[in-house]
Amino acid sequence: MLVFKNQANYKASLCLTIDVEDWFHILESPAVPSIECWSCLESHIERNVEKLLILLDSFSAKCTLFWLGWLAERHKDLVRKCQTAGHEIACHGYAHVLAHEVGEQAFRKDISRSKAILEDIIGEPVRGFRAPGFSITNDTAWAFDVIRETGYQYDASVFPAHRAHGGIPNAILGPHFVETQNGHLLEIPSSVVKIFGWRTCLFSGGYLRLATRPMIKWGLDRVQAAGQPLVIYVHPREIDPYHPRLPLSLIRRFKSYVRLKSTISKLEWLCRDYQLCSMLEMAENYIKSFYFEARTLPVVNMRGDHRITKAKSVGETITLASNEAFRDRLLQVERAMSTFLGQAIEEHIALEKPRLQTTYH
Image 1 (cartoon, helix red, strand yellow):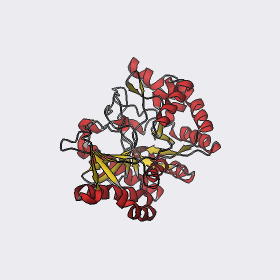
Image 2 (cartoon, helix red, strand yellow):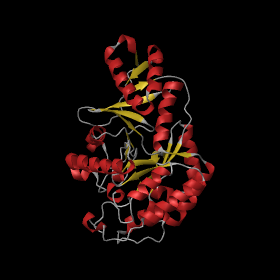
Image 3 (spheres, one colour):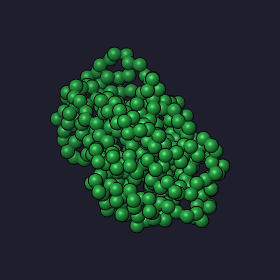
Image 4 (cartoon, helix red, strand yellow):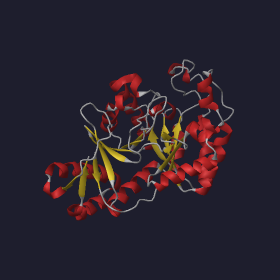
């Protein structure tokens, strides 16, 4: 891991993300209808997304909507309405597939198809991606190469704890760059806090529904105190307590349907008490804080076996001017950062480069 070191503090951001799925887009259950049946089912997506847009507009809040391509091509006007309202349009794949189930080639085809559909609808590049079910793990880390190769500039697929569909329990907490075969990919993991030594999420999906407001506030304060941006995610079906139910197992019913009535009030509270922004805005602010306030930023090197590991520090500090290998790696990161911020940061890099140092882990 390559870490750029300095002394400045970073003020955490709070970003809201919405995984735009319909009520029947549940993962890993035999009760879930196949994609061939989806178009025959009653859709609740339009009214639920409209309700979310009204809520956000009433508080001048912004968000990132990770759209399923299958839904986007059937609700093009709704996608454009989200864009016109000032929200970021990002990608959640096309057919709601899990990376570890479909494999590399099918995963590449799925996320490329969805990206093309969304870009055709909104007329501009789609920069962010989130895998369904946070299904990228240590065993499917090839997905980072595919995501970057497909043209995405940031990813939000890492759940840095154990979970049913995936998770990378030893992942870095907070934004970091992942070195891939196709360049650097900014990773923005979900937010978690430690409770009795266990990484726990209080801010998203079923976790948000189960947690009380004091618990969420406590966790939010902990994440912000650690200098990490807070990432919240919800699904449109979670603000719709009366949507149709699938005949799931007892555990899955609990996870999918518990306390649905609490979601909208918690979102209203968060919109009222905090400044919510899109993931792209948060990413840009985070990168600016590194260059313009000299903040530490970690970079994960994908090893030959594509596993993310916690490397131990060897205590070696290297001045970039004296080591071309490390200088080249920093330049790659700088190019990745410049894709977010443009010419202004490139000029700043040229001025600041002689003072930068790295610590290699």
